[in-house]
Image 1: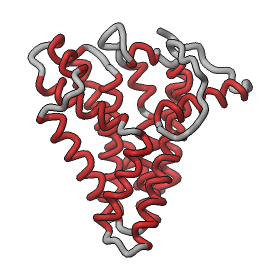
Image 2: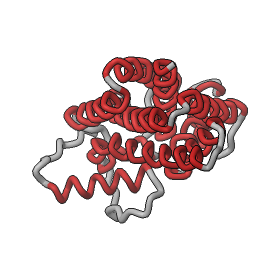
Image 3: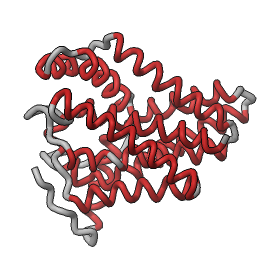
Image 4: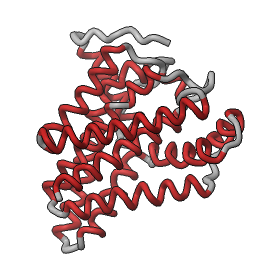
Length: 261
């Protein structure tokens, strides 16, 4: 489904889309439009990186408070990651676990899709979550300084979510129902606006050299997961989008940590 590009002069419409993006991506108490018609999420996807930057900033505040209380960097890092997970209700982590079980464990396309719809987590899903939390916390702990942690968190959360509309454009829904199909396909202008906004936020937060390196590696990780989904199930689902975001977020944080070292 092709989504008509927004008229940016329609401030009321853009405000509704921002609230819709906040309401979908977080558990923050925002009053979002009651009805979410097919394609409405795709129209609101330009705001994904802005919401991601806010999530990263709140995680950074948690890290700073933990550091002020005298907690060691590993403990503060785990608290920061936990806060970002609570803020999103584990939306992307749930997608990562389901995708890991389905894409890596299913025998054929139908089996993979059935596994991904099963709310129970198998060994691949559990291991994916362990590595996701562990790698993100390790990257933040290695950065240590609260300012660097804040920059990395804002950049990673913004850029990873900014890339999701491009996945919605590049792949077809793997099934006719579900969140992935209902999200719709954003118009090219919306997708590139989201991607560009996420990239600009990352470059401002990390600086040009570190930002470009993080974006290249993070983008490659997201493309790899999206390509795996295309090969294994023929496209994307809501779970796949969560897995793509997690891949980008993890690698962006690792790249920022490595560059700072």
